[in-house]
Length: 439
Image (spheres, rainbow, N blue to C red):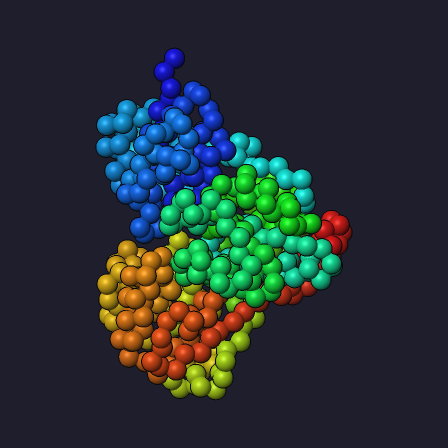
């Protein structure tokens, strides 16, 4: 029998993991291409031959997903494997329909095929949507484990958007490591707050090798999911963060619904800012689909540097980029802070946008009066800085997980909005981790 010819549809993360742990060593298949979407600058590359293995002397080409039908035809693909996250169920089946209409079968590799077993206890922190609050959840759990005297390592979902040869295994202990690995704004948003806590963060694309390194350093491993993807490691405890601002999405987005159904603990976050009826709706969904899961109610209180300087001012709100784009939120914590502290107006930045930031607004027309902090490449960061400079406002509120003032020069007064996760009632995360003997 000839080898089955496969195209992997991805976004520079799970696609490489699926290839590495399932398909690379399978003698019955050959991967003829990757396709890429969601993230800019990750198509029209090559998965390097020295990483792909002896079956791929020229490496594996990476194309834009828009070319899928042509690729199926020209490369004589037998099957398309879907390997990215935080998309609607409608979107998944649209890609499936395109693949099948072009002559290929369609498949998704799930946890059974792709999760790696660790010799150390693993806590998976995942979500139903991007921007639900995984990062503050991970920080809180890491601090609890640290305080118990155990060593903790956070392994982050992959973001290998640069030279894959240099990104096989990444270890972040100090801020200098961010520059050494040429991290994007999106990567810095995940790594910096953990480094500030003294927590080692690991990432890359070769997760068997990442896991080996993590097991040498940790007593407990936290898997910190990206978007709403499921864990690459087989968890001993799965904590799923849900966002009542988008109640209903937990049933209609992939693989967020899978995460919900797999949850040991579900944290209903942002209960202090979401409409009560949306919280109740989410509780009813959990009771219907996951009645045995432990439910934790939580909020994310925020604070602003010198909040008195916001009152009666025209404010530019800068928010976490993926939360607004992949996550489809129309606002974030900077907008909430502007309203709370009496801003005269939240200025719409769209007409001031330039270059690649303008392209982001065109690609996501439903964005509200917010500026997404996109920075997947130096050119995007440059256009972000120019856009901020152009906006006619008095004050800039930075609602991103990192302090953008370290990367961008602000000519206007810029104030940072910070936030952490707090439980509003029992059970608390500390009680749960203690009962499960993680601390």
